[in-house]
Image (cartoon, rainbow, N blue to C red; front, side):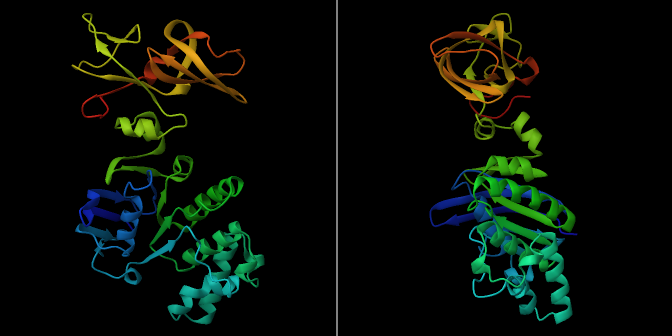
Length: 345
């Protein structure tokens, strides 16, 4: 079992607080993605779990054992870095075997593990080549194979695909998800790329300013953001937000149209761009930019003086300067507290 429990972990660098009393549980064999913009604290949290940083306060538990006082080598973890960290003067076989030899495993066991993980990563035909002769995607596979060969309880990955081109990233995402599921290893994966997060994760922890804002399944994070920040960060394009005012009839007045909403004093209306559709009655939108995207068209408009985007079917011709009427799918509307920025149930 390799459940990871983070209890009240905080980290200060001088006067700067990188993490604010973070609590998080990663279940055994779960693929958890830490997602956020640069400086949100995700890499700091990963390095604390790895033992490369010491928490200012709090506890780290792996497999029911407290490890925040232990060195990295005693935590049962392996890491895959952004820069691969493969040795160009060693063959692929010796790169994968490096940690196994440091652990003084018998040669037969070294060969077994190297062969098995090379086959998992589809690089068995490269074992005799030097890593300096490999492409970026091949070197990344070697780095992952080296981590898997250690048969760790936990694999930590710090933006491992960011140096690859778009096509290779797509290929490696699919490969990583399958390999790590087959290895039954608990994985924590750091990225700022929401597509990676949505496609790889069992759960996503969205981070901002040293806090975990929401930890949930990808579909829940996307469809039911717990805070305005999550709705504005997840999605391309992100959620639309419009001010709302409670009318005397109890309904919410949004850009000239009334909507049913929560029974609270103040709220903000939110909707995803793909959840809008042309209609005879709805929000009046003055089109500013039209971007054809194959099967869909991204329309950037102004609604009641606010920027607003809609993803529409491409079979309707729309021109800049045109005023169109858009209606939201009613059960896709979300509401946020304008003061706390948290979702209103």
